[in-house]
Amino acid sequence: MKRRQLLLTLLGVPVIGAFLYEAIAKSKTTSNVPYDPVSAQSPATSFNPSPNTKPATNLADANSEITLETTEEPLLRFAAIADNGFGSAAQFAVAKSMWETYQQKPYSFVLMAGDNIYSYGEIKLAKAYFEEPYAPLLNKDVKFYAVLGNHDIIKTNNGLDQINYKPFNMSDRYYSFKKGDVREGTVEFFAIDTNSNAEWESQLSWLDRQLAASNAPWKIVYGHHPLYSSGQHGSDPQLAAKLVPIFAKHKVPLYICGHDHGYERFNPIDGTTYIVNGGGGAPLYRFGKSPQTAFVSAQFSFMTFDVYQDKIITKAIATDGKVFDRSIITKTI
Ligand SMILES: [Fe+2]
Image 1 (spheres, rainbow, N blue to C red):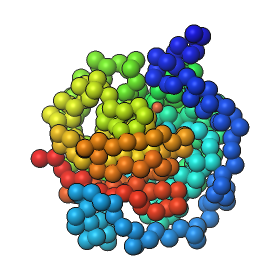
Image 2 (image 1 turned 60 degrees about the vertical axis):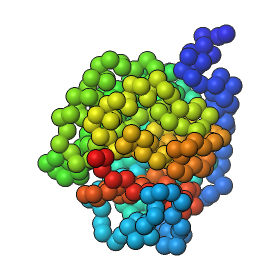
Image 3 (image 1 turned 90 degrees about the vertical axis):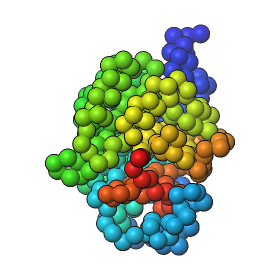
């Protein structure tokens, strides 16, 4: 086995898939959805979020028509993507949907949960796979906050090139930042490195300490790899063994990730809602479902989160701008 193949195998990347990714990415397909990120800066006229969009069937939506369609402005709104940096038609279609959603309901930043640049994380591809697709948002000064996926540590000085790439806004391999209220922050975000070669010992003690010290009303953790997933990669009991005790101790209500290419939201497990949000543009995976799955759909998508004092309303949004899943997250008691 060649050194590169060995490395990819160690990183959990199906070798054939990785080469396929590279081949497809190099050929950069043309979008079926006409989307010119430059001209897209003018207001869109085609996007019309349907007020009749039916909420997904899940426990949280029992009273959703009233609660989810509130006209009350959130304290904070943000978006999230993952597994997006592929340069594909699908990535551009998701980017278009993100832009059209932004024009209706602006958000000030985007969590980017890894596999930011396929296939090997090379920063020289950032222009084509990041700056171009999201140009309209970047031009509006929408910030992206990245974490390292398994593809982002291969030809990048183990991720250092991406950490040093300013538009990814990474202050380190793992870091936290507050958004919202100026003093305490409405939400404190904890961006973690979930790769197998992460600095696990120091990172876990940092996460434990920082969560304990945080005064933010909401504490949200995100990283690339799922603890729970019904996708091709599946759940990761070893990762869960590391993180679940910390999440439970500090009552973390939400963990957002990618890695499996599709969307899956779980009913809360030990008080935490887990969401796989990996439909950002790389080829989709097959998903099954587990007894704890609240909603699953292998499609290209991104998410928005409306943060209120007592709840967070999550929306999974398809390339046509339609919300195909929504839920309410409440604070873990
Ligand atoms: Fe991944």
